[in-house]
Length: 271
Image 1: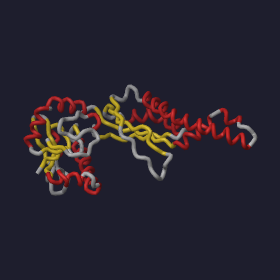
Image 2: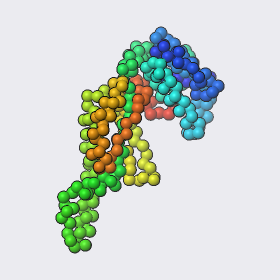
Image 3: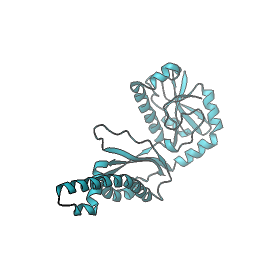
Image 4: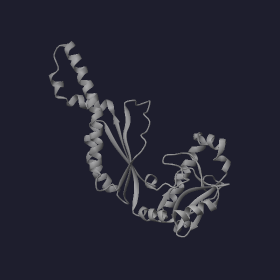
């Protein structure tokens, strides 16, 4: 058996360690080292390592429920203590290896948990309808009002203006992103770029143009909305919509330990 670790928390989180781990036959447990508790469950090593493990990590039917449970356990612990979330697939070959990590990184873990008491993570995504943006740029071009009366000349000039509008739309993305960043100055403690979602086949002109993880003071939801709401209408007029979600476990701001999967990884590790 191996030992799958969901997160690290303060010792008081032990009271919230109830229910199952990744599966119904694996109870959730805590390994306490001083003032730090590692929340874990046992898992069969062969399911996570070797050829069987590689196959499982490519199988969404196997992976999905476990990834969802990973999130659920961390959110359960968040209600009892600040947490340091570990990446999906953080696996130790023995409890002694886990103890060694807790001893080695004790100061860094404690410092992070102290910060997490007062901070939380949100995500902010900007999605642009490029067709709508290009139409808005085209309509705002003063040359549109002076198109020639002749059908042929009008067509040629309009095609040129639409190409100019497409270029302007691409350039405007950076301006809009900078506008949003300025609106959040003084509130956001740290910002990390996240992977953009894939373009939908059903809406080929719509795509994500920026996606951020935001570290903000705990309880900043109302202030975040107060700063973003005035931007919604002018940005939407050019096809850009903003979506803020949270609070999340602070995945993107937690320190990385040797033996833990790298940022964004879905591979298992052995402590």
